[in-house]
Image 1 (cartoon, rainbow, N blue to C red):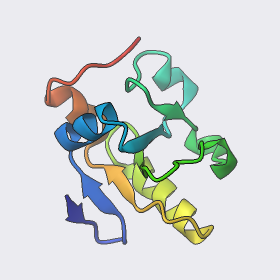
Image 2: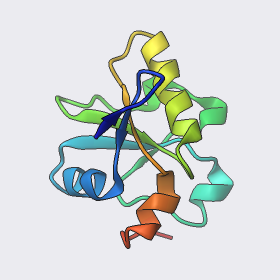
Image 3: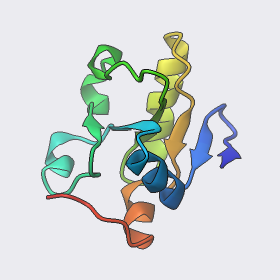
Length: 109
């Protein structure tokens, strides 16, 4: 885990996977429908950045909200948008699904 230059914390794929399996995080995929139709993060909530609506993110109930995308750029944007709206959602998956797959982690189709 590392702080990002923009006030967003970088989390790494293996840590996100482990914490997702332990039900410690809510993973929010902000990729677009054409991308998520091809492959998805297991257990992620899909809230495309093009129609970003914080109300679509379920109540985290004490879990950390972590944003994810393809490479890590849109997930930083989503975190900054959430913070600007007053939410404490300041973490994202560094490297996105590209890093996820490079780490050998599973995806769903």
